[in-house]
Structure formats: structure tokens, C-alpha cells
Length: 389
Image 1 (tube, rainbow, N blue to C red):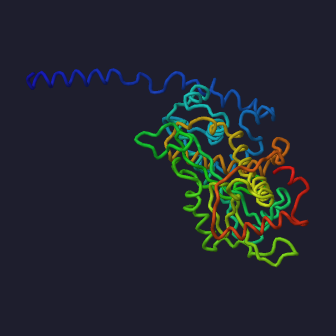
Image 2 (cartoon, rainbow, N blue to C red):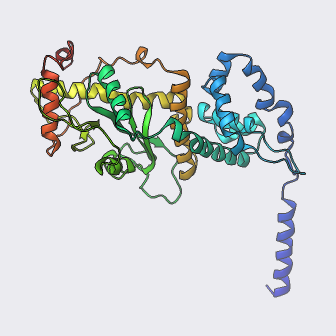
Image 3 (cartoon, rainbow, N blue to C red):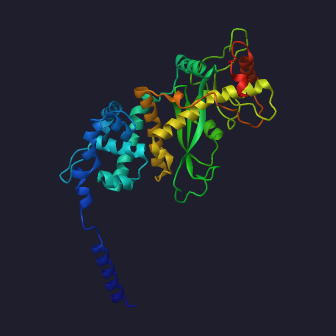
């Protein structure tokens, strides 16, 4: 084939590509946004019915409007000569509906009559704005002794576990297999994920979250690498000084974070006794710790039940998935503060069986024995504990 023939063929291919370019500047489906799009046809009706509004957005009108007021400046854009900007309210409605329903971008494209690429941009913009504008107020990391003592008082009153500053655990957030990812996202359950690591108080609120570690990493390693752990072990969180668990004791016992068998013992990190054929005291300790630790499991359950996007593999880039999950966690705290929660009716904390765990050794053993002694004492025991082991 000579040069002239190649040139002619190139021009032919180029003309074919030009002919296949989109016919419409705006697709007819998208032109119908203001006449049949969900925001324009549903929003006013939803606002007239509190129950329907809550079912659709998984939050009350007051909470939605509070969010809108807080995010308005970030989300408001200027109209141009070419098109009218999407309003902050519509952006927020699309994003909250995405989180609450678990619908895909394609589903939202057809229901809201907005292009998928635009929806993708909106979700990133709004979720980042939610986190940036809310986390300092609704997920502040305690840094005063009285704040930590309030958390400890909550665990003591509700879970009968003293000196507890929070319960820690990790939740795997499913992802569609990221491209060129190898096995770093593959977790021990054989699906692709990133990890949400959280410390939770006795009101099921997230005290601290770390989102985005690869699925193959274990919870203990993630926690030990977190900023929370670094501040805790360096003494920068201003947690209360050790004190006796009860008046009959003179032993100074530190305040602790409690975790499951996946976490190692430390002066400020408590886990169950391991091994089989444990004596009564150790079995009671494990039951009492498990009972208090379930607050973090319940918090994850509330989170996933509220935000259905967490029920299926998230088909987003890792950075966007992290933004989505972080937004869900701070919205979780916001809704608990604004609307409250009645989880106790749905979850029976007494119907628990301690799990078998592997043995452990370390500096936390003597501390753990002090808790066990307290739980066996007249002051620290609860009437039903022997029936649960």
C-alpha cells in the first residue's frame, strides 16, 4: 500500500469517526429533567409527607434542611450563558438518595434525568463537602479528660463495663474489583474491600474513623498504624489517669479501648482471654467484654441499614469510595444527634455467647486480671452473668 492510499484511508477513518459523534448536545431524555425528573416531580410532594420523606432519604426534613444550609455555599455554582447550574438542593437530594437507596448512577440518571458523568461529579462534590463541613462538629475526637470520662460513664451505665473509652472494630466495605489491583483489596472472606476502622461510644456514635486501608490488612495492624493509636500511646489524647475500679481496691487501673480477639493486649487496649477450658472468672470477663464491645458491631449495623450503598459492592474508584463511606459515618452521627435512636428494642445485649479466642501474653494481662477481679466482686458483678457463660 503506497503513501497516497494510506493518507486516503486515514481521511476516510477520520470522517467515519466524526459521523459517529453524538447527535445531540443535550440528549432528549435529559431535556425532560425539569418536567419529569424526580427532583421536580417528587420533592414538593415528599416535603408534604414526613413519613414518605424519611423513607426516601432515610432522614427527616429538618435534618435534610440543616444539611442543605450547611453545604449551600460549597455546592452553589453560578449559572452560565450555556446552561442553568444544578441547585444545591438537587445535588444534595441526588447524593442522599444514592447513599440511602444503593441505586446505581445509571438508575439515578434515568430517574433524575441527569447525565451519569454529572451525577458522578455531584456525588464526589457533595460527599466531600459533607465530611469537610460536619466532621469537626459531629465527630470531634475528644481531647479533654471530662469528655473521655463522659464516654466511660456511658459504658459503665449501659454496658456495666468501667474505664471504657470506646469499642474498636473494623468493617469491610465491598468494592468492585479495582483495575490493576492484584490481591491487595482481597480480604480473608475472599471479596474485594477497603476497611472502615472505627472507635464507637455507648451511644453508637463514631468517635474516630479511618477509611481506606486495603482489605488484606488485619484490623489490629490498621489500628496500630492509625493516628488515633499514635496519639493514644504518645499521651496526646488527655485520657484520665489510672484509678481503682472500686473502693475496695488500691490498684490503679488504666482507662482502655476494648476490642475483639483480633487485637493485641496493651496498657490501653483490652481483648478477651484466649484458649479453651477457661475458668469461671475468665469466662465471665469474656462475656462482660463481649457485651460492651457489641456497641461497635451495632453501630456498623445501624450504618449499613441506614445507607444501603453499603449493602452491595461499591462500583467506584477507591478515592471516591472512601469519600462516600466517610460521609456515611458523619451523617450517622448527625442523625443520631438530631433524631435519636432506639436500637435497644431491636438488639438483645443479653443474648450473647463469648467467642473462643487464641491465648495471648503481654503487659495487658495483669490489667485484664484486675477487670476480672472486679467483675467477680460484689460491687462489679451483675445478677445474670453466670447464666451467660
